[in-house]
Image (cartoon, rainbow, N blue to C red; front, side):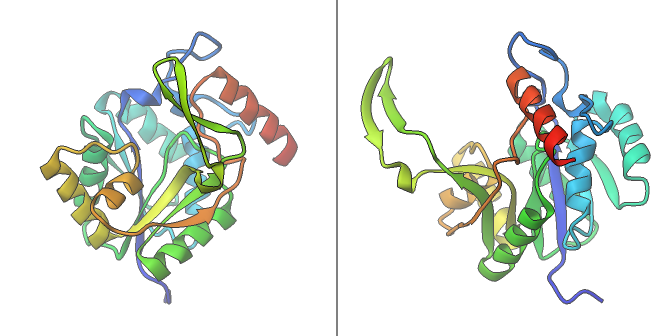
Length: 237
């Protein structure tokens, strides 16, 4: 019997943002189905990384209906013994996350949200962000900015931001279910659209703890990211 809080993982993958951008290799196709050097698709690697953690007791994917069959096939091929469920996603990331939560038969203590296009999150990072959230109620992975950050107005530099205070958010992001549901409700009422779940929780007035993440936990967006991922796999897998 587990001695830690119950946790359900959610992967929102219903948006148009799940397609590769740019004009290079893979442009326009779904990022989630691109095969990596491991022989597994991006989404499969992201799911397997979560399921490797003992804290992840179930996994729900919020999907586009047109992707149901290929994602179901992917789940059956790579995650057949795991508790993975599919639910129709919404028009926005926030709607997709809410639908996934509402589809759960019983509310867990915590919800973990992860990008399906982040296939290389180390298990230790997943475990540490879960542990921090269990202690604080809300925690995210993030990396400190290493480049000089400029604030601009149009094409002109307005100021230079103190990068010692700048962190680049990653996923997973983990929240108590009460905090996340309250944040989703407040954002909906205010018609506030966040870029990640942490921004919704911040908007609702809750503190969010940071756990330092890994530089390998990149999000696949364009052909350059794909080449970087391939290089990382060659070194680490």
